[in-house]
Image (cartoon, rainbow, N blue to C red):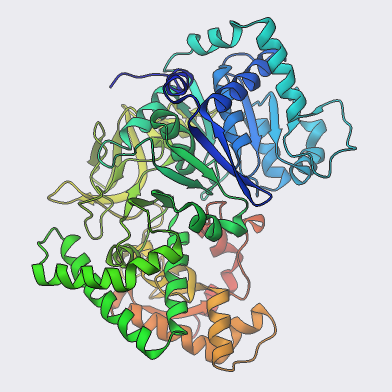
Length: 601
């Protein structure tokens, strides 16, 4: 594969598609198209303005805001200027924003609105390297004045005038970049400590933009819906790297509250999300069916039973009998086609789950109703994807084979090691962590897994998360946790038991679904805490835990559990921006509840 830089690939794609739609956004109830030419011209203006204001090749520029067309235009503009684009989660507290800007030595900060500007104001005197702060959404900021701050429109005008007077400068920056130069700095979500900046080169990201579609093609008439955080590698692959490589259309949600509505409006052909979102969709289907008539419940149960039998055979590489295929197609027309349309999945050709392990039961459900959901595996340090299942060869309980061009081996202790053109350059200003992760060209993933006879990878757990009971038994908590999360009433779970006599669990309930159950069964409560502590709700969740215990070995079974009396929030440091529970933090914060489960036995 010939390697290129993102600006060169971007420029070639623009020449090919010109006035075709590249990006689409919704404002005031109307979808607006942005052509490839408009995308490219605005990115050039961003890059030109940065150069005119002193951005040197290899310097970082931070972007803080929710998914929108401006975000990716700025991203590409920074890279066209030879800079290193650094995304920051819009949900981060001001101290976390300061950390990324300071750690990355960012020279410019682009931010969305007044809310994000307020964060910068808290530390404006602590980041002397910042030259300018540019705001792209001016609502509520008309009368704000600060010599460091300027509007996005004024910034574009600076770039336009500079480009007209110096037409070759931005092109020279684009042409001077090499594939070994840094493209982006992506900060890890910090589940095990402070975020670290993973240095990804143009070779890394452009190789991934091609490799991800080798076995599951993406076409220029495809459409995706962008709603995961753009500073996360998962969203960046589809909204930027693969996008500029293959020329399809990226649609941006109005807000996180409108994801379901926008999904139905756009009905994307390629879908992707984190496991929690797929679990939410599954949960919504089951809850909706609980209110259906007995006849609809019966028909859905029959259809799902047929779908699951067919999916089980297909996901174990076994032939599907003709009679079963005929029954399935009938049920698809009667039940599943309408269900997919209501979800906005009617055009989905393939959908991906990534960024965290997903329960095989969730994958099984979507495969059963005709949604081709496949699981991928990777990490930021490997540019997002190491393995992914093929659309027509999804194997139950695995994350698929390695991408073509990726070498994978299992170390003596079970750790997954990766070697490919996508392996990162190291952690920014952190040589010690880099040495721990990169050894002799191999990325040490920190995950435990095994390869089966077909070359498919099965992830068993994080190396640091494996529980060894006081009896010497090794327990993989993610396996049990994923089984629990299949319940529509359990939002998340943390298995406890390291150096303990038995396994216990902290459970986070799904507030909406449990509250509905309480209302349907006339269980009175006034607050979230009341709901979690009500004896009938505890008994109800016990039934869900018992269902899981019946499917696992005795040594793995949950002897006691506690429902957390509060919801977990990112701002409290309990979950990451990608909704992964920070296991260590939760263990420390709720240590009294954990110890209570081990008293008296």
